[in-house]
Amino acid sequence: MAHVVPGEIRAAQRLVRALEPHGIAADIHDGYGLALVSVWIDLVVWTDGLVYRWWSGSVSGGSGRRVYAACPADAPETAARRIALRNRMLQQTHPPCAPTRREAS
Image 1 (cartoon, helix red, strand yellow):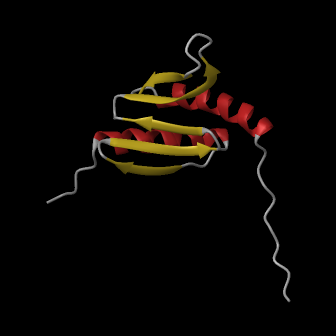
Image 2: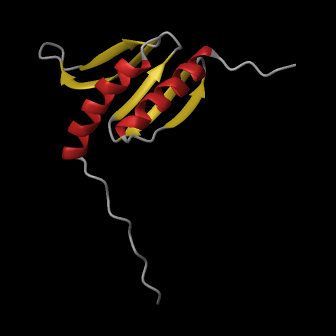
């Protein structure tokens, strides 16, 4: 019997492929009916197979809560473009760390 890949994992895989032309490598983690696509510091996209969601970088003035962006999972290229923009913003505030070198003692 063939292994059936759940919809949330298929959606996450489509997003990861759509992020590649933007020079973004991402990891997928799944469980409990959700798949998480880890992109950068403060940029994790989650999907239930129907919608992609991620923190937009904004906070509500009234409640102080984070405002989330969303995009239909049947539009991974659109989501990837929007996520790539957010990723560029985050890389300016959280640049990649240089690898640490261990000195031999």
